[in-house]
Length: 220
Image (cartoon, one colour):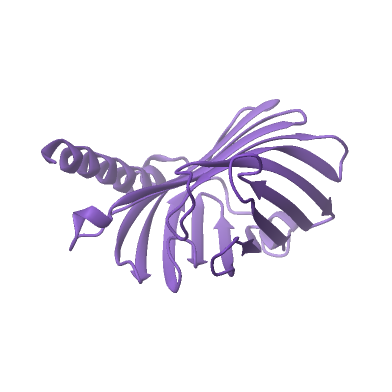
């Protein structure tokens, strides 16, 4: 127990340092003149909704909204950590590389609803040509009941067959609903048109009754 508390404190301290000291140490680029194309596109937004079709259990939708401005990442989630539970996030965007591109966003979130607590987390993506490996994770810490602490993750490895079609593998670890498997594994098929993306995920096929996730996202 002491080891878990020590690791958790170090993880939270690291993320707080990155989030609040990083912007001070980072070099700030020159501000573009008003009315320029760069100035008009400093903010980017995305909205995604995932529908979970769960065998012998309650199906539900989980919307996520994010906003990015240079290094700043803001995010809001619902039905993500638990049903009837929301979370608000702030993070710092890092990007490295040209052909082999690494994007990392360490974050800190506040969770409230059926679960209340804080959650250090991350978004991660590594891409090379048509291959992309991405991961999203968080460790939810309930200050009032340490038995409710848990780690959530969503992982994808995909290959873009064309500019509008991708396919690959996915896995997740969640407590929103229960299955016989602690880590669910499956495959994905995604389609995109301009700024709209639709992806179908099928988990647990061949192990137990499959769970289907339908995700629709738009960037603007």
